[in-house]
Length: 512
Image (cartoon, rainbow, N blue to C red; front, side):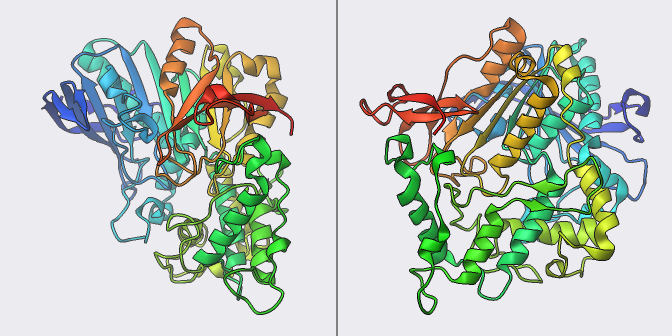
């Protein structure tokens, strides 16, 4: 396998071909408590058309005991690193969900066409220097997905003598955007996708990060850790029991009517109250933000974040401990880092540009460039009819406490999908689940950190025609408990009796 090349003509989008840079056998071994089978670890690169652009680096793991299926993993943030193809899908804990490679899948992924540079950004996952190059930006926008899939499928066929019988995709955050893109743009390439908390309108979300963070950069507007805790605890006190149980989770978010003005300082600012500038910045975080200059027919607004309905902004990976500044500090909020990199490299294309001087709602001379970039990064449409017609299946889920990619945004996508195709048609190939208390990703950022074997549900649906029935998810955080996994439009309500740590004591309820 080492030294194998793939001609440009085998790849569905323009490249200069691909090559395998290394291939080695990994013998059976124990990893994180599980027996990992023997597999061939393949690494390679897809060469760009523009010689000044970075290559697309990819990984492909080929198990000796192959199950005749393949799975592509999506990335995260602004990508720049190759996901762990030998690890769990969507980073589920090993002791709850068996990774695809251990199930016999040929697993592949890429860095989306650029390599994050250590130290180039305070948070490596948001290094956006690649956006200075047009081909690299287009690869991140989605082109690398098709290129990587075609190269991996070619190499799988060469290794096993046959193509996969089924090919699936799984990704969260930006990887969720990628999952929706492959289903929409290349419906014949994948039989099913698992999409979690998708950054599907990545460009518009980045603009909203800027609008929100510019608000917190105003004098006296930032919430330090004490203010973050004050807000979160007040929201929980108001809304935690709306689902029938005080358990640290807000399930009935539609009924939560928290008003931050109840925390308003009567006198000087202190840790036990919020100032007018802080409340103003928080309301901006929560509110719908419109971009009236945006190109007709594309994304023109963002629905805001659930900061008054259970989103936990506390901690180093959320609002952190210092306000947004320029030059960026590692201690400023996560979404401030996204805006800093996006504004400097993708919009201004000037590493020295101060992103806090750019108002995303009134961008002046930057409007044309914003339109170009945002239209490139946002999902093209919600037209999944071709994907459905060839038998594709979609499993989508999002946490209700996500302060980075708003669950309201995914609701908007789902509502548009239903409007475009009709609820009955959607029911035939897609499911959308909501998870109260779940933050953003598997890093324990929320009150509820779920383990759920979505891949098995997708397999049963795609391969056996068994549509998903009632689901149960397990919290793998500090608490041991389970809940029903409720489809959007319903939420887990405690029945008022029974063990509150087990799913059978809850029902998926409608309304508020």
